[in-house]
Amino acid sequence: MTPRITTEQRRARLGIRHHLADPIPEVVTVASDLIGLHSSDPATVYLAARPRTRGDVTAALDAALYEDKTLVRILGMRRTMFVVPTADAPLLQHGCAQAYVRSERKRLAGMLESQGVADDGEAWLDAVVTETFAAIRRRGEATATELRGDVAGLREQLVFGEGKKWGGTVGVSTRVLFLVATDGTILRARPKGSWLSTNYRWTTTSHWLGAQIPIVDPAEARAALAGRWLATFGPATFDDLRWWAGWTVAKTRKALAALDTVGVSLETGDGIALAGDVDPIDVPAPWVALLPGLDPTTMGWRHRDWYLGEHRRALFDRNGNAGPTIWHNGRVVGGWAQRADGEIAYRLLEDTGAEARAMVESEAGRLQSWLENDRVTPRFTTPLQRELAT
Image (cartoon, rainbow, N blue to C red):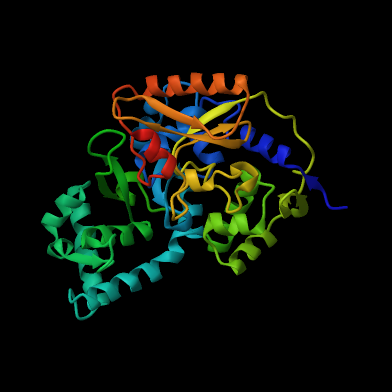
């Protein structure tokens, strides 16, 4: 008989395995268990770690990222930047990011040629990438502005979305640095400014970590990532894993075939679990959490109705990016935003009961106190976030 996993059990696993029902002291363990903290928006890293970690999370993250270097920012699943344990960097690099290098390079070369920057986009990229890498090595660490001063080619501009309301220009430096980072030879070091800054210093991977990211077999890396994901996010569906990882159907199937898994019946359809992860677990004590936009839990599955309900339109943007959310016992029940004066405004989108409302109010107050004078605007705004922020 196919094991059946109820939605209540999935929510219980989420609360425990995502460290939301019972925070832990070690921020590196949090990043490891979640297979990375989203870092497209720098605030997400700190706001995602805060409800899952006991102690001074800002100091712990800064120490792990910039002193001990047990955490590192790299590109990973879905061309997205994550903060991950340095020990896990080979899995994301060779299981995900490396596969994007050729297509990213081809696309950029085509843009350079079509917009008249270069007759031979590939040759132009070869020269500019070599100059850029040499400039970073010479400086040790450098911002994009400093590199544009060193490398003439990085000062070029590219047009995107011509004729569209959302169109504009982007510096070639942004594209070139992204391309080289996708290959894993450079990475983002400490930013200039606070923990909210996106003005990163760039450095070579070998300078920052003492060596290049170790090479692992891509198929083995994908299998390891699939197993880690199922351990934290499972039981779930094949489509959930494929979407989360950004893999093809074939790569997802091969990764799962390397694991000891079983088919399970979810309330939403057929699913997959690691063998040995089908027995019921104890439901944790009631908990609430205010999670940031792009939080790894909110963005952990393609099919979200079992924890998101009817709240997608209010809490996600048109491109599928999650805004700030309020969670209660493994499901999303509302959203929040920070106003210009620092107040944490929130709205519950369903009746959670008096006990949960009091817990949310208390948690909003703790978040407001923690942020103090810092102001956070999500990189991707959502309808409810915009409404609450005004």
